[in-house]
Every structure is written in structure tokens, then in C-alpha cells.
Image (cartoon, rainbow, N blue to C red; front, side, top):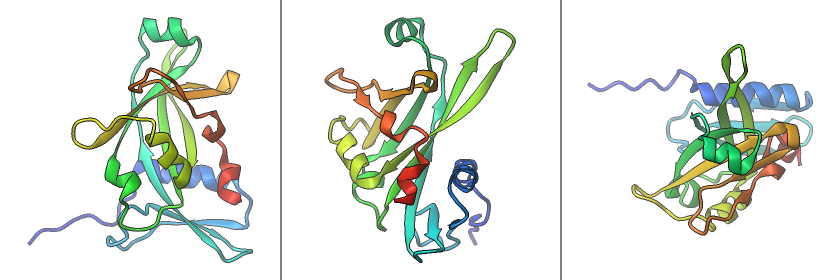
Length: 180
């Protein structure tokens, strides 16, 4: 007999839920689906006033230190790398309203290195537009190399076939998008 742990929380989902609770008003509540059949739905945001809900898929990034060439090219900031399969965006088994990408990036200070978390809050229709500008790689995955510069309010994907940046600053830590 095979057992699967359906009850432990994914750290990225917990981080996203915590930040949603801190950023939005008390009229919103976050729920974790316990039904394993709700594929692609990681969180449900419920508006207690309007009684409407939004489904959210959460993805976490990997952390890597930017190269000297990247720092010279893009200036101050940090980097994160995310892979998402084509099917998780374009062929979801359930309707997704938002993607939240947890960006774990390395802050290199003079005294110590630490991990900083930022979030991209992306409506599903915008995510589909973003990936239309990207090339699907081996394994049916999109690779996002994201530059994060909260000080200058910049965020962009710099890993694209045409070498053009995809501007993501509208989505960087923009929790208001969830409350609309």
C-alpha cells in the first residue's frame, strides 16, 4: 500500500498565505485545499464581504548569486530562477485565477549573506501573455531568470529567446491585484 502525505504544507504556499494575510484587509481569508483532486490549486482567497473566491497556484524559485556580468549589465539587484511547466500555465486541470511566484533571492551584505523573499502576484491571463513571449525548453518547461531590484522598483525576466526583457514590475509585491 502506498501512502502520500496530503497534509503537510509546502513552504512557498505557507509564505504566500502569510504575506497575503499581512498585506490584505481582514475582509479576506486564505484557505488551503485538503482535497488532492484539486490539482493546480494551492490556495483559495475568499472575500468575506462579497463571498467571492479566487484560486491561486504558488510556485517557488531557486536561489542563485548573480554573475558579475549580470550585475554589470543590470545594476543593483538580486536574482531568482523559476521553472514552470507549460501545462501548469496553459492546461490546468482546474481554473486558476492567479499565480504567486515566491522569489527567494540572495542578499549579499558586507557582514553576512541572507535570503530575501519577494513575490510576483500575476493574474492568470497576464501569465499566459508573458509565456507567449518565451520559448518552451526541454521537458516542456518555461525558465524564468528574474532580476529583482525593489529599491528602484524594477523586476524583469531576462531569459528569453529574443534577448528582450519582460517587464514584471507591475506584479512585484503587488498584493492589491488580489483584492480587485
